Length: 292
Ligand code: SAM
Image (cartoon, rainbow, N blue to C red; front, side, top):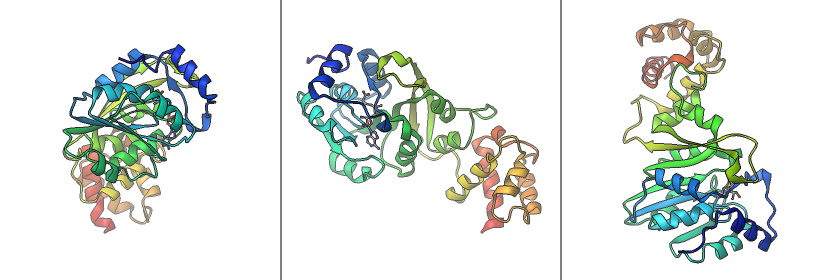
């Protein structure tokens, strides 16, 4: 087996060989701890028949672990300077393909159709660039890609919001957006010392397991998300206050909003952060008739 990329000594040697300088604006914090990488991969439950999608391979630290644990890896990397490095570091692995593209611009669905024919399942596994964690996760979920789930490293603060339960201060529209599509859990807290350069914030690994059906069945998904966002607009305000100030014509529709709250069995003086996904689903469906 080849020497791991993610040791401090080998990483330094690779960076020096290519004169690579980190770009903070691209969220470049590379992992230099093989044990952490192996643990991340283990949370993805890959088999020899799995495909893996990586976002931001860097110099290939996680990519190589994925290559050893799956059938095929497709990695999207935005920074052109990393391509020759990856060609070098990943040369022992024939089952890896690096695509030079901003993942937010990429047609991931078509890439999956072309690259993962006949595989048992596909997982996204990544140490995400922290400046775009939420847009990346939401893109992967909203495009309804045929993936089994996502295991990714991100800022602990965002992980806490994603996996938050109702009634906590972290619970908000991001928790709902992600938990609508997936079961979300924080599986590991990661110290800053396993990165070069060390990030300014604490990190965590989350596992998102796609649900077969969304967590709640609603009449109109877009409207459901509009209602949840409106409900959290000002956290100290009551639901009734937020909905009347945020929904279109909310002030004029106060009576209708009140009756939708009553019909869904939700006390109008409650705050958004106390409502479960099911309650938001009922509320959005009751409000729907007044808006369509
Ligand atoms: N996977 C490597 C590791 O764990 O050591 C590097 C992770 S580093 C946190 C994030 C990587 O994502 C960098 O290589 C960066 O260049 C890349 N990146 C940043 N924005 C990106 C984007 N929009 N699309 C694809 N890759 C991106």
